[in-house]
Length: 325
Image (cartoon, rainbow, N blue to C red; front, side, top):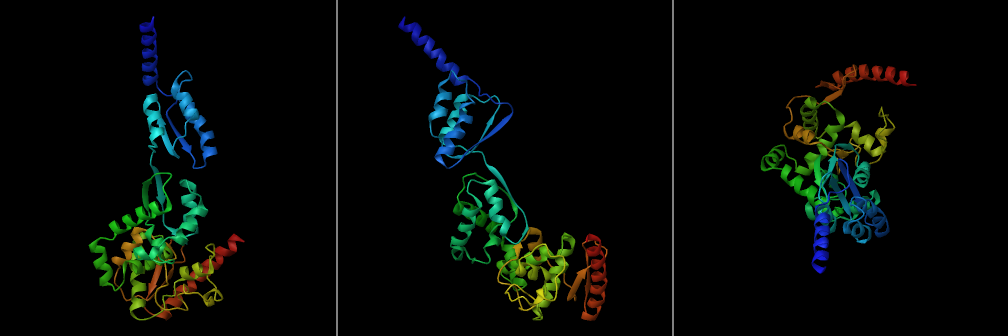
C-alpha cells in the first residue's frame, strides 16, 4: 500500500516537472518594484501553470524578484518556475536616438524601464559627473545613440556606467587623435556635433558644415548657429529665428557669445561626431538652407554672397509659412 502511494506520488511529481506552461507563442510578464502590485501581477505567472500542480500555487503566493520576464510556448514548468524564482530577466532593447535638447531622455527611459521619468531626471541631476570627466551641462554626451540591451530593473547608476563604457569604446585612440588634430577635446567635438546634427538631416553635408564652423572657430568668429538660439529660447517648434531671439541672454546663444556653447544642444549621432572629426576643408564661412526645400544648403565665402542666398531662402520660407496659415 505504501509502495503504491509512493509510486503514485512519484509519478505525480514527474508529471509536474515535465508539464509545459500554458502560453501561446511568447508572453512577456512584468513584475513591478511595488510589492502589492507585484503580488497582483504574479497572478499572470500562476496562470502559466496547470492548476493541479504545485507550481501554480507557489507562483500565486511566493514573492518573485521584480523584473520583466519572457515565457515561450512549450517550455517546461520547472524551468519557468526557476526563471522567476532566480530573477532571470529577459533583456530589454533600449533605442537611444539623436534628439533635440534632452527633455525627452528621462521620458524615454521612464517608458521603457522600471524607474519612472522623475527618478531618471533626479538621477541625472545628482550623479557625480565630474568623476568621469563631464559636468551638469555636458553629461548628455554620455548617451551615445545606439541600441542597448539592459535589464528592465537597471538602476540609474548602472545604466550610466553602461553608457559611459560604450562612450569610451566609441572614443578610440584614432578618434582622440583626430580631435587633438583639430584642437578640440572629445567633449568639445560632441558639442559641435550636436550643432551640426541640428543644422542638417543630410548626412552627406555634415562634414562640410562642420568645416564651416571649424573655420569660424579658428578665425575667432562667432558661430552664429540658429539651433543654439532655438535651444536657448527653449522652443523647438520655431521655424524662423527672429532678430529678437538673437538678443536672448544665454551662454548658448552663439550670436552673442564667441566659441562653443558650454554644453551640447542635443544628443548627437555617431555620424555627426565623425563628421566633425573628418570635416571637409573649405574656405566657406557661411551657409543657408536652399529655397527648394531639399534639406541641402548653399555655401558662401563672403558675407555679401551669403546675404543674396539668404534672401532667396527667406522669400521661399515666407511663401511656405503663408500656405500653412
